[in-house]
Amino acid sequence: MILPLSFFLLIIISITSCVSGKPVASFKGKNIQVFEFITKHYEPAATELSKPFWDFKETIWFADSFAIEEIRQLNILEDSKGITCQSYDIRHYRFSDLRKQAIYEFARFNDTATLIRKYSYGDSVPVVGGWGFNYTRHWDYQGTTEALPDTAIDNVAYKQAKIFRTVNNIPYIIFCYFNCDKMGTVFNLDPDLSKTIGCPLVKIYLSTPQKKGLHMTSELNFLSNSLTKEEQKVFTAWEKYAKENPVLKK
Image 1 (cartoon, rainbow, N blue to C red):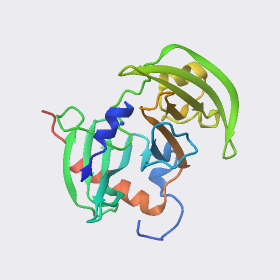
Image 2: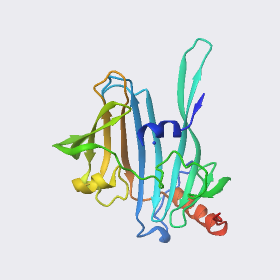
Image 3: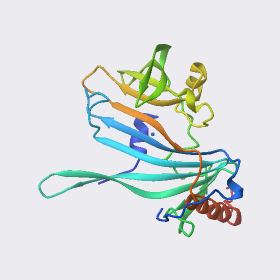
Image 4: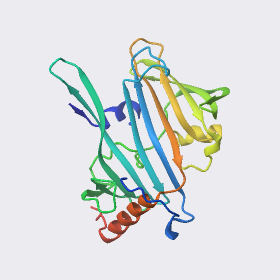
């Protein structure tokens, strides 16, 4: 059974080369951010310290007005004895020209990758998985934000707050973690809430006191503010392809 990421997004709205070297001139001075977008789901009544039954991780590369998103899907297999196992396989890579709102899907992460399809954000093609640059990220919470003492996780300091919301008559508590060392990032899990606190929201833990209900974390794990030589080659090739093969708006 194959479950697309859109199935889980409904719940949470969801290089082979070893060459190294200095960045080429065209990438100097660009706003480059590479991070992992991580979502974990836990059994009811579990805690963040429990082992998640669903651990989804996708890498996002951003360079000014262009982005590449690694799109994965969850595969669940069951053998003849009824034992199931799951894998998170790469489905494709999504290259976006954010200014033109044009999307190109490629089968592999290399500069000679085959194009699968192209379309725009305005088309009827569902844009699921990855970061989702067309999403409006906002937690529709009830009441006011409750400030909590600052904390540290894995030697990273966070401002902390707590908010509340109700979904399908199930009350949820959302613990929010804000990283003030990432003030320059254009990525956070709730821009409005981040503006209120003064630092980007980079991690949430959602739980409920009820026995039935979702327990999950969503987190941005920042990896780099530069691209490898191979990553630059991919950006350059795909940007060139997009320029020569524009998406026609309907």
